[in-house]
Image 1: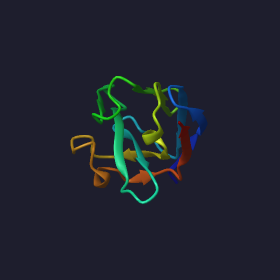
Image 2: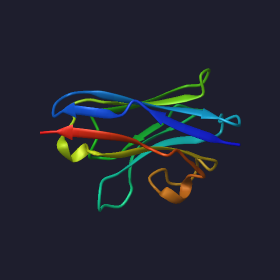
Image 3: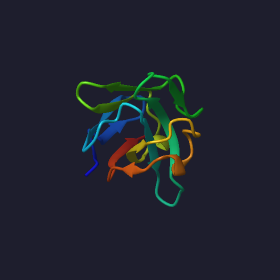
Image 4: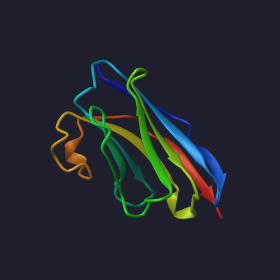
Length: 125
């Protein structure tokens, strides 16, 4: 049974930094794409960043480029999102996701087969 468990969310002031982690278990993820999405109250879930587990190729949403960094640790079956220069508009529940079809568009929710329950990130102004 595949499980994705996020951790590391919290409250931070604008301009600060925070890291969130995703622990993956239940199968080998070597051919997967791992993504981070977020959903703010009253808004649709949106793509943040993704990384190919096998190649390490990365993609970011324009809104976070230069501020967020995605990474993975193959040995630990974990993915990470380091968030710097946080803004109040980054406030959302952050979700980790895993997709079996890394050739598909990484920004699309339908690319992902498994989702975590999310972790809250709140940025105060």
